[in-house]
Image 1 (tube, rainbow, N blue to C red):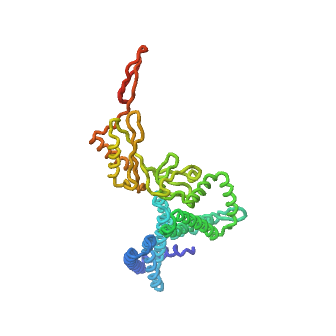
Image 2: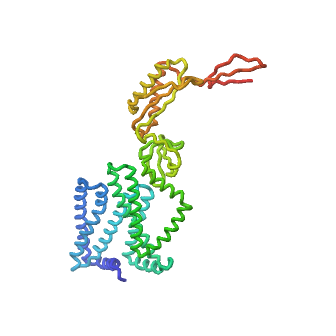
Image 3: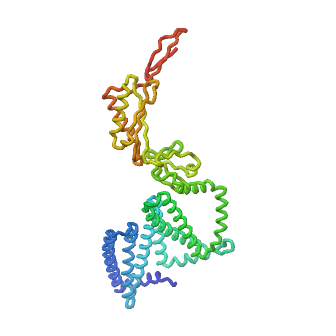
Length: 436
């Protein structure tokens, strides 16, 4: 069996009965100590440098296994002319596997946001790499590869083996991850370009990501020897699917790009869509995330934003108007009460002084006089739900101190008995009335 790792494992089993293994253990310990020192020194320098934070994190994750691999390789070359280096050969493969795992985990965490499935993917990838290394060392991996290569079938006129399919999938995954990582690097740089409109930056990022993934898939298919002209058949089928079953999905994606390009709304805008009111948190390719004042998120398809009316309260100005209705009794001095309402509203730190709060007489209701207080807020993205509560509490305290009453609902009933009417009785809605 021509397997260098398996042969190294067999040599290591033989070296344990000789003093050769002591030399290798010593070289391995010295290499790890030197690598640890280099790693500590360089990590401090990288953290103090102006290098991008993501690049620093990626370098520090693979610095130790790479530097250890270099030291072990130097030691392996130094003693290979006199002694066996089977332990160092195995150690170098372990360090390579460690570097691959750490680099892959860094790319996954950089591309995708933290979540449960991401941790599961990291564990699956780490386990797979270590399992492949174990199978390689024990000499079982070549037999498994031969068995997978023996399973053959045809796709059209092209013969394909199961091993080729697995290699293709792995190549596609690796190239796609690299493409996503590169697109994320470009995205982070582009999002810092404040001289470019925010919507335009988002559009450019999405186009770059789609282009990178498409090119990565083409490169991966070419690398495994698949005919790219087969994609024309898939493209035709995809076009038919978009025309029939996927037309809603295609409409949402196209609508998303239209919204970003026409700048009808941006991140942070306060909008009203149907019965929903809140701030725009995310503009995705297929949907928009609207965060309401109570903290809940509403997922709205992009097609809805194109085909229905949308009220953008902050399209030209960031401020938002809040209306606070209130009712007082008919014995109230209205002019002094309206002035008091304006004074109380001005005390709130987030209420704008220009334009200043405005209090008006709205109408005469059944139970009392309807008043309205309007205030403007300059930072609605910080939440506006607590402002009415605070203003109402201050008004309640001031009304109690000045004897201004907030009336109960009033009703007037007539009791009819044997065709004889009685005087009307005015009662609060909390009382119980009976009629015959």
